[in-house]
Length: 92
Image (cartoon, rainbow, N blue to C red):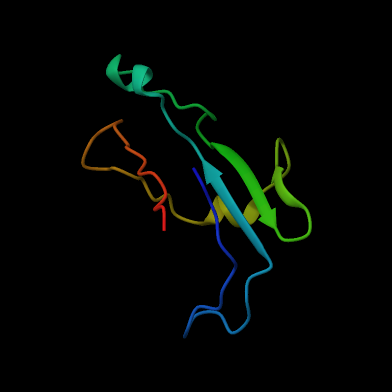
């Protein structure tokens, strides 16, 4: 997963730029998906990360993450079970 670009204001959502981005990621490798395994790298909860301008990316190993625990999951590539294809970044 690549998170890039400046933090920006979102019209009608955020009145100031966000200072921190937190996310939880869990995934399967193509081999695991082909074999039909239901387990994920990162376990049931996934791997948690925080990103901000001052410290960069921080892995939140066993730290409590109550905010992330409350938000819904958003599967990528839901129509292709276990097959998620990443697109290369545009070269402009």
